[in-house]
Image 1 (cartoon, rainbow, N blue to C red):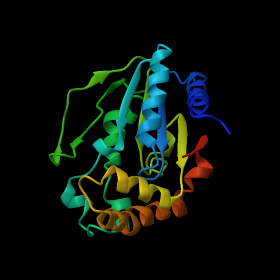
Image 2: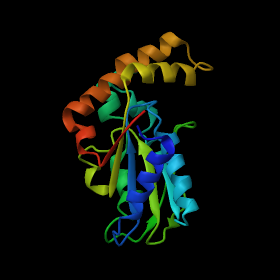
Image 3: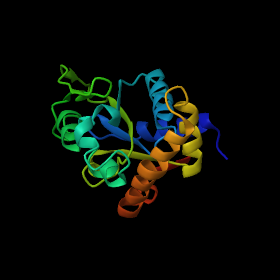
Image 4: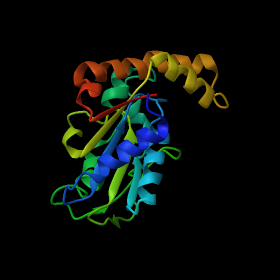
Amino acid sequence: MSTRDEVVARLAAAVGSIDAGHPTRVAIDGPPAAGKTTLADELAAVLRAQGREVIRASIDDFLFPRARRYRRGEFSAEGCYFDTHDHQSLNRVLLDPLGPGGDRRFQVAVYDPQADIVLSPPRNSASVDAVLVFDGVFLQRPELFDRWELRVFLSVAFDKTVDRAVLREQAISSRAQVERRWRERYIPAQRLYFARVAPAERADFVVET
């Protein structure tokens, strides 16, 4: 079994092997509480140490406002899958500008989840050999699949994600509240994603966490 450092080094080597003629766009995909943000941060640190310009971004900054996200109900799995993420804006302001023919002028957010407001931050410019390391759920949906040069999927047992979420959110939510969100909304939404997309089969790398 590979160590964590070996996994990250292998991913960094895969990024280094890509010559796309534009910034390399890397998806770190997986269920909630799979460890996507941690792995993305570790990969970004290694790439920066190698001298690469790294853009870090997350699907959490490309949400629809709360009223739209929960219009089917707080515990709706369909709402989680269909109503949560603004893929059109993600493509428009980040993935397409960094892709083939893009002008490399990008935004890393369109939404503030704390204030529940839409954002329009100034655009930044990326070098042609920059790397976007992007973490989030549902990143291999049809709306996004062809926007990535490298797709990494984190595989984890759903029960383990529940336990992690309870630990992560114990200061703000009870175990019963967390378990209900996971078992009624997040996990069924992931099952819907697996049935429609089969992300582990389509990813370039599968990392067990």
